[in-house]
Amino acid sequence: MNEILLDAIRHNNWATKRLITFCQDRNLSADQLEVPGVGTFGGILTTLRHIVGCDASYGARLADTDVSWLHTLDEADLQELHARASEVEQLWEDVLSNPIDVERIVVVDEGTREVRAGIFLAQALNHANHHREQVCAILTGFGIQPPDIQAWEYAWTTGRIWDRT
Image (cartoon, rainbow, N blue to C red):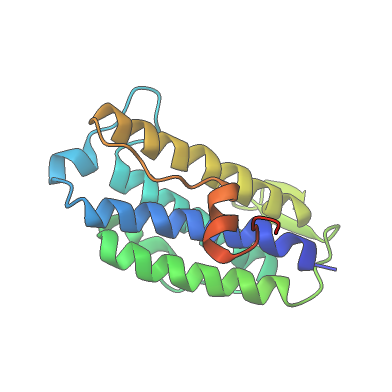
C-alpha cells in the first residue's frame, strides 16, 4: 500500500541530496553559505541542515525510533549533511517498507499537541520543497543557476519517464 508514496519520498530525498551536492561542487564561500536571502529561513547551510534534520525527525516519528545525530547538525558541513541525507533516505525507505497507520496519534511539541501520523508524510514533502526553493532563490541571487530538482528531472534521472518509440 505504501508503494504509491515511494516516488514522492524518493524524489524528496534525491532533490535534497542533489542540492547539497550542487552546493558542494560550486565551492561556495563561507559568506555565500551563511548569508540569508530575503524571506528565507536562513542561509544555504542553515537551511539545508534544517531540511535534513526535519526529514530525519519526521521519518523517525513514523518509524517510532530515534536518530542519534538529530540534535548535532548545527555544525555539519555539506559533506556531513550529504552523508546524513543518505541516512535519512534509508530511514524513509524503511518507513515505507512497513504498513503505516496514518491514524496513529503521535504526541508532539513537548507533549502539548497530538497529530495523526499521516500528517508527517505530508509535512515532510511540503516542508522540504518549500525550503529547497529558498536555497535555490539564494543561489539565483548570487547569479548561480540552481539545479533542476523538479519531480520531472528526478523521473528523467531515474528512468521513471521516457520517450515513446
